[in-house]
Image 1 (tube, rainbow, N blue to C red):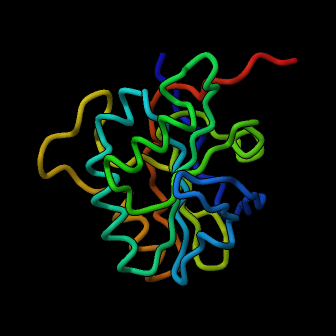
Image 2 (image 1 turned 90 degrees about the horizontal axis):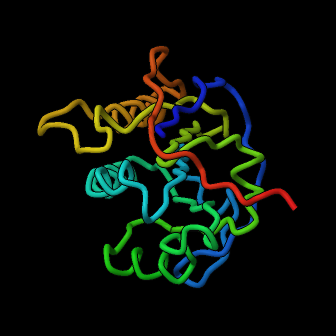
Length: 185
């Protein structure tokens, strides 16, 4: 079932974290932050919504990094129930696709919970001061890629944030598979 996150809570400040990445390092939010802003993406390996846009995420990541935007992706899914989202499979995906950003593992799901992440993909765009300015979609893609020439909504929003510190007032929420939560203990 498709899920959409809530609209952007402008000015919200994310709790920091320390998470292991597929490159063997451990990252905090401060480590990822760029001089013009930060983009955090909740993704996973198996979600058809993520698979449909991985090429576009990678393209936009490369383009945004040239604008001074730091970024990383986080997988928070329950890997016991969804083995394709295991850390080992994350390492394979990041290596095979040569991700231009760190791919972090939120094994205990504490980051996803503290950020109120709702789905994969779920995008959080912050300005240089660490205030949330974007929580919208990548583009018009759903379970299938958007047509060629589709407006690059995430890229445009993050470019605006890099230039002005403010995100667009009108944002279309992302849509994707729900975060695969672990059963409560």
